[in-house]
Image (tube, rainbow, N blue to C red; front, side, top):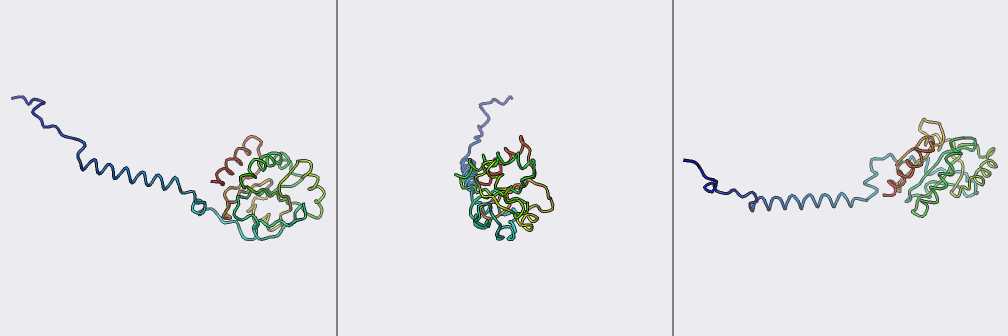
Length: 195
């Protein structure tokens, strides 16, 4: 005797237990998704990044405008630090881009500091002329030897740029300058540091 389809009892997929279990899983996934989307706490996001050494933050450095530079004065802000020199060809190519970036990001709370690696006693006029020539409108000064060596961390080439988070951690280090690659890389890093 053949079994007819109508004789087989219908099995319901959505039983009350499956409905309740599915709802619980969906609620848990939604809660997890919301909490991860809202974790904008920069301290937790940057906790694994290296802390910028105290010697870099606490050293008072000479500035072109006469007001000493101390990076710790920028605590609580995203800080862009650029090591450069007046004689450095890539630095000369990079400076107009840094001036543009400064204009773009200063309203968003990013501070820019350019630190020459030259001797402040012999390069003061050259640095002032450089600032005028390139229309540099952010803080310019001279890195002490110890600050420069600490930031460079064994790689003594310039330019080098450092993006430091609001909580004093090294978010990104960018060595050298390439006209096509570096500007988008700097913008991307600044955007990420501002999150």
